[in-house]
Length: 442
Image 1 (cartoon, one colour):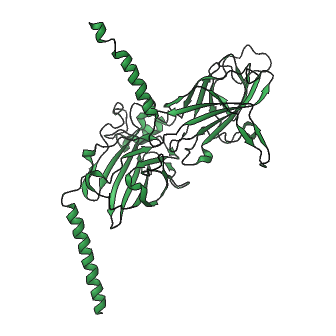
Image 2 (spheres, helix red, strand yellow):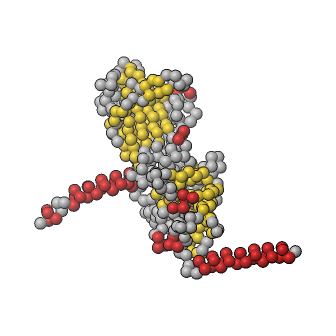
Image 3 (cartoon, one colour):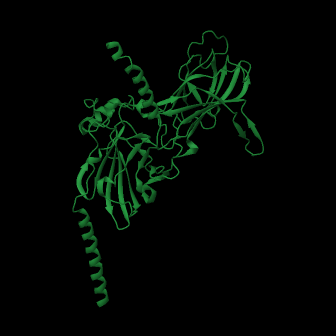
């Protein structure tokens, strides 16, 4: 009987694990977002080929920040990398069998990283050498591309004999990406600078990598707190939003900051020991404050606070989902771009910093925050302050969904609030009328 009791749960567990993994990789706010890695074979060599590898980030609001991407794969046969331009393998491997010319990398499973800015021109190609930093497509499509050139030896020398690399992996810069197998596609067509001639690659294959927040981390990396002008209660981030497993190693007060930060400057920039002790233990908190109510408009203040003492967030992005974003009138201090993943829905927008002003969210401290205010026009058929309508449905920071308070914890609208708002409006109208009469008497 015990055998039959446990015969089915194991396959069911595996089935649900696959379903959950695939669901995590699908982002409803960016359903077509992915990173596509394209290999274009540009020429054949006596023992292999020269290819240009182009990585394009088609994700609307998830970029690759410093220390940048790391790309890996496994060779199908006994291929080696003779040379690279615009990138480098992190390890050479055992090349002792080669006499004379020694390959750049002899490993069966090479790991490649981008070169840093400022390398000599003879080591560069277009779209390389940015330290692996790649913008999101929605933020700046011109910098959402990274490329390098690789010369492969001991490989096939024709379309029929080339073996495609296997088991691609991508760190961006951490975990979270899952890559497909390489797939042959129609050869890429190039246009000459004068626009009068087309050339094409000898062979092209693509690899598609998608992001899964569940694979990236067990816990969220940000949380949301809320407040409003009509309620004195501040709704904090949920307790242990980002996990409290490291709450004994966090920084509890200003007295510890200088000694701990100085001690850890050379350590991993993602160390949880560098995070300020809070009830939520998140490196990032987004605060949404319903600030003012006008006759035809209402105003929101957003504040993003960094609690990590050893991390600057460059080219940060913030995504909010709210039904009134279809009628946003003005945004102060941030850039704003509506996201339209579906044809008939306009309730999602991306915010990011102004270049050279606040596009870097500095490490925790006095300057470790960025702020903006939004003015939104009311749609009287849907607008209300009741039942938490004025607060966002979802918030993402740098592409990761933030932990939200439960709906029952949102700042509620007091029962007398409507009458008070009406009374204030009526009193204002009365005072204006009296003032106008006085002017008439003068």
